[in-house]
Image (cartoon, rainbow, N blue to C red):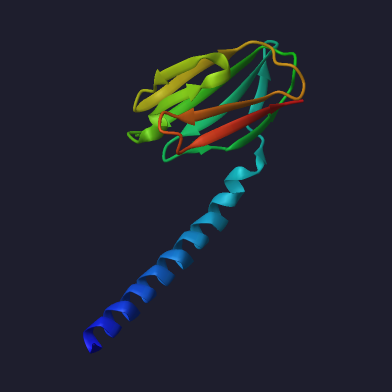
Length: 131
């Protein structure tokens, strides 16, 4: 009986620690969900830079509507699920190189369009809001 009680107590402490640890990670990654300044305009095209490694960063981007766009996906030692990129609205799928840059051409999008990119498993994602 004593062994069972100790086992339950140890399990409760481990679960509580996991919850505290994961909530600490969420607060640090919440900065990653804010709209970021990762958009530039070069030669009449807007370029959106997304980093892929352990997820996508930034997770939220605001871009201009009705403008040719390139999503530049940068990898640097990426060997996780985020290297298998899918953008369903474009019918786009690719396996990104472990390190380098991949350009995804995006036709002009209407204002209010939200384009989502995700890994092949659906664990990691990013969104681009066109205004």
